[in-house]
Image (cartoon, rainbow, N blue to C red; front, side, top):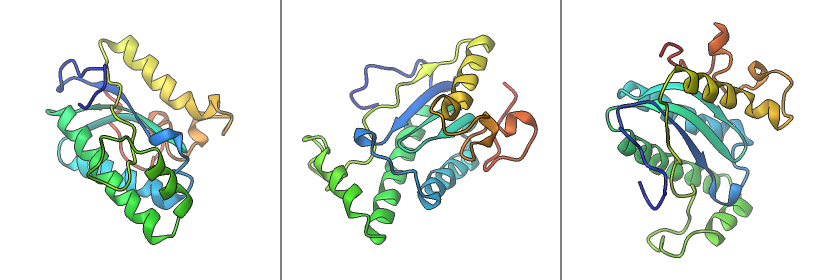
Length: 176
């Protein structure tokens, strides 16, 4: 996947991945932009991708995911969401963010006006139950660590509620 030094060990095994908006620009501050990401995750799940855990913050997201072709599915996710999010920003005249996405775009991305995501997903293979628990805890505590909420389950854009037996915005696989 791209120029990342991180590698997907086996695309059929669960991996912790991170998707970061270019230059850490805060795009996911509007429910409509988060909905684009959630809708895309729902679609990938209907196509066989398993999502075990997620959190979406204002400028990045973490996932624990698995699929038959994780590298391909994550590339599809990033490509589709980038196009949809740029379209949303353009239609809603969010010119300051679009200008930043154009300004910080990598030189070799000369086939487009904007770059939305940073390159790579920094995959980490989940090797055992202990590591899975650690990554889930890290993901759920991310909004708490940033001071956005006091309890992980209060963050709307996370699977923390799912792990407490409550309904989340998307259904994740809590058994691994």
